[in-house]
Image (cartoon, chains in turn blue, green):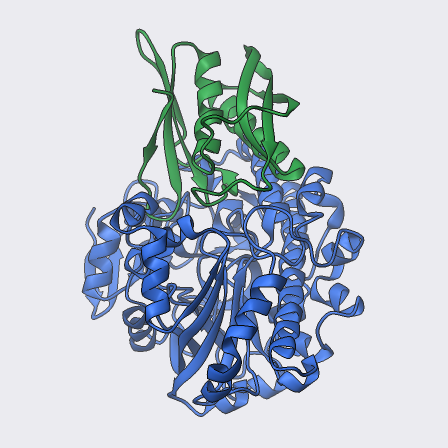
Length: 473
Length: 136
């Protein structure tokens, strides 16, 4: 592969073979070297084969080896030019994303009551395998139709939450009829649950503020905050599986071939493409609702821990943003404004100031961009920039650098737990054994990822958060 | 050996082995669930029929494993016993037995889905092997 450095943190490869556009990675030399050590760069090149792709197959600084798309992959296809939608560019965990809540509490408050809050969180946040429903399945049809609005109507959260949620917590164009009974069955008992793997609820401290946008976002130094990372659970996984199975034969009908079957795709404008987008939006609505319910439970846990009522915790939503989603957006391509299908697979939407999709109070500063680090390390709040060179996208995390098996061999889960507790981070794992797979050493340096985001105008630093407690699946 | 784990940065893969395609598919199912739970010593308490279609062995394997995951997730089971009764062009029929996940400890992250990434089935003179990656 002939990748070359075209900027201090930009790497590109010209189209080879049937690639339609170049590949482009935003990374420091160190992060690029880590991406070279596995198959992630080849996956960037594979994505460049998608019909209708414009400008480049792009990867964020946290790029790592995925399936089909690399994790951290961004691809925009021009709908009017036969551009495709690829479920692999969204992933099985449709609308996996991050939600951040501010609070009225300080470090001193946490020292006094943190242990109680952690125990309440541990009791109230379902995690691990399957079951652990908070809301039950009665709401399913409404949730698929209207997402967070449906659970708000059922008494969860506050109306203001919707103002601070990407798409206001309701993905447009949802087609609940395209979500199979099997997907509904998998999701029925899972609404309001974290899952496992790299999903978590973390209590954090705003360690440092870099930009006055923090006050618009509702954050200040010394504040306790809560970050939730999860997605659409079994409902989303099954929806993607169902759609992938249907897309193989359809792809042949459209004469499309791709270098990896996981990149299966059809034209956005085709009946199959529209059906996938409708199913995807419905599954995304499940994810928005899922995080909304979990935030409600987090507020209840804090209220119980501080002997008060949820309203007095002042736990307002900073933002909720997806990092596994495909969206129809308007972007400038060359001199023309185009309607594009933007795939973000492990990449966070990052719209700059003045973007029409932002709530009025965010318009002057840009969208909050939430980037969780690995367990035990910092997480970041960034803000979108008008100059963003990646279709309004930024990194979504630290990015793995070590396989799960390697991570397990290095230390036991109990050792990782003890190290975190020794560092003053309370841990409430669903499974102690799984902790080592998510240990900090299995991930890249999130601070370096953020520095690259800032230097390449993907997003700008607003606040750095450090962990106080973590609830893991 | 029923299967081996393949390292992957974010997810997990296996190479499953079998003397026959039937055994290959059974062992691939075993490997997928053995990544999540220690299956040794588990006696199935509940059986589920498993039926899937597919125009090629690759498609059949993807669909067979996806079907196993669907049953396990929707019924709350850790599957630990796999039987393929019929495997032919166009379809696979078999069954799986499992135990409730409640009370079992996870030894690996729950598998979200089977992927097509690098999916392969190869016949050697005296054995079959299949490579499959899972989203976790």
